Figure 1 (cartoon, rainbow, N blue to C red):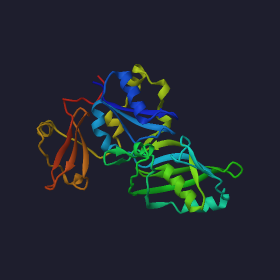
Figure 2 (figure 1 turned 60 degrees about the vertical axis):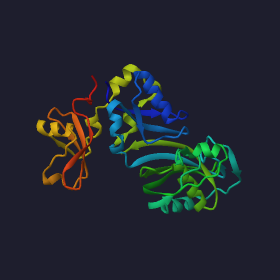
Figure 3 (figure 1 turned 90 degrees about the horizontal axis):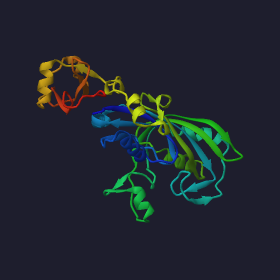
Figure 4 (figure 1 turned 90 degrees about the vertical axis):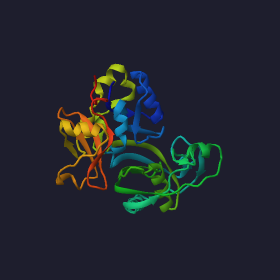
Length: 298
């Protein structure tokens, strides 16, 4: 079975799950997942996991994320992006100096309210489904961190700004646009959103969705150990592998004691397990791969 990761350049239009379905059709397998949803109105880097690699998505290094995005001042849509229906017009266009000053107010850690049209689940239902059905619901703010936020271009005639943001997982660019406009006592929507990095992974290394077929997926598949090169790891012995395969914890030297999570590689360099430190200072196999699920294409 194929196992590994794909870096895909998602265009404007398809959902993230549309990309997953496309890869499923290419390979004829169902075990496909993705890290970090991109809205239909957003384009850019989408990380796809294939086979056993889907079990490692939760520990994949995905922070920070970088986006280029547009702010169209003077109008607002119900979805806060270019796909929605316009609900307000006639908002003021701020001066460039005002916008520059406003962006500085959004650096650091803060609470952010997700958009009503989002994939957030409310009692088992997606927020966007509830919003489209005109069902009332309440969203909860979440903590985000913005490391960088810069203005790249501003056209006061069209009321559009182009910015770049480097932020934590869970940040909604559409909400950021809404809040920037609110700070400037006006309203706006995200005219485009384009993701260029996810953790250490870069858009320049991605394959366009239109170029994905069965052969290109296999050629572009990145082994698990390559994708996790920046994650702390340990090489284990055959006897340790045997213990882990039976769900037993193993002791590790003091140099690993400050690390809550590790990837264990066997002596052949294959991913053997994901280890998490337990209350006794031992490392328990949270996920086991070993011989049952090889992590390189066969």
